[in-house]
Amino acid sequence: MSIAYIFQLFVRSRLRAAWQKRNLLLFVAFFSTVYVLCTLLKDFPNDMHRMNSSDFKVLQMANNWMHPKNMTQIWKQMDRLISPAGLYPSNININPFKEAIRSAKIVKADMFQKQVSYKWILTLEGGQQILFKPILLPRDHKAKMCDSDCEHPEYEIAAFTMNRLLGFNNMPIAVGRKLSWYRDIAPVASNTLLESVNQTSAGDLCFYWQCPKLENMSYFCFNKGVVYGSAQYWVNRGIETFYNKNRWPYHDFHFFSDTKEFFHYLQGDDRYCKKFRSEPPYTEDRWFLHIIDMAVLDYLTNNLDQRHTYLVDNSSQPFANVMIDFGQAFCRAFSGAQLLAAPIYQCCQIRRSTYEALLHLKDTLPEKFEWETEDDPIYPILQPGDFQDMHKRLRELLSLLDFCLVHKGFKNVLFD
Ligand SMILES: Nc1ncnc2c1ncn2[C@@H]1O[C@H](COP(=O)(O)OP(=O)(O)OP(=O)(O)O)[C@@H](O)[C@H]1O
Ligand SMILES: [Mn+2]
Image (cartoon, rainbow, N blue to C red; front, side, top):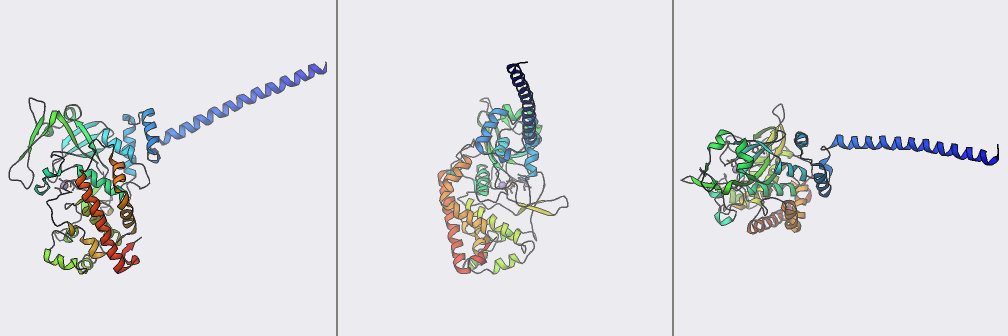
């Protein structure tokens, strides 16, 4: 046996060992890949909210993530995000949820005849419902009919956007949605909804509706059956409005109050605030500071209609504050706007996070608002005049708060 032969045997055995090891490596690599893929898929779509927008777009293109089989999961996940702190956490990307509300297939459509505004309740694939308020009135503010209680659903979207930008995160997600009556609604509509409209020879869908404060009914049409409106996530929890002695304590701060008395309080007298603070549940900071947050959003959007609304748990106990009902906001006919800020300037107390969000938005509001709404089917959500009024009111709120900070000191005004 020559040395060359022994060497050859040695080389061959090394090569064979290397080959076997390679197989082993391949084997390990294959199963690791399968394991990693399984882990990723297990959390999909649960992990959607951790993605940024570009990840989301890639995923959308690659996976058809709004496939019917994923929808139940998406809605379940949205429900799981609800906590006493709000309807969704601040640090998540809500674009996937907005997209789902805006485009999931409608499987059932009905009129929603609670309260007074014209609205539908739509069930989406996967079982989630949305409150859909069709836009009936022209978008320019000269044609506003808010003083007749006819609603502008686009303001629900504006209010939602501000609620999010202020970090409240307690308004159900509201986005614009474009629907075709013929394609999306008629095939799944209840008889009540079908019978409520008449089709004209031109293919428009028309109906009469009573705006509460108008003497006669108004006539509205969806041209060629195209319907634009606000689509709002329906919170599947018990929801209640806080009434006290047949009055609404939050409203006592403004337009239900005696005007003369109010101007007295405008001079910096906080007696009314003290009285309010002494009545449960407003003795508790959490509830009281929510009223201040409501006043911030109502003042910014010039909204009179909001009441203190909250979710209850299974034992009917208050669980989380929410904000709803901004369809009559941005009403120029309402002249007592400064009264909407009464809880703020009379009590001179506010969450530090709300104050800081207002400070931040003072200079960034136009770009932030644009960023949040630019892809909406009813963009621009606000007419330039309405937007400028809102920005002006934001600066006014900061001046009111500056006054408080100077007179009462930071530690008495800002709550952590
Ligand atoms: N997103 C939602 N999730 C769950 N419940 C909701 C939601 N939006 C509204 N509701 C319920 O439906 C009721 C009517 O809704 P909303 O206040 O928007 O109607 P409206 O006709 O504009 O009322 P109003 O006549 O007071 O202006 C609310 O009081 C609340 O109980
Ligand atoms: Mn309303």
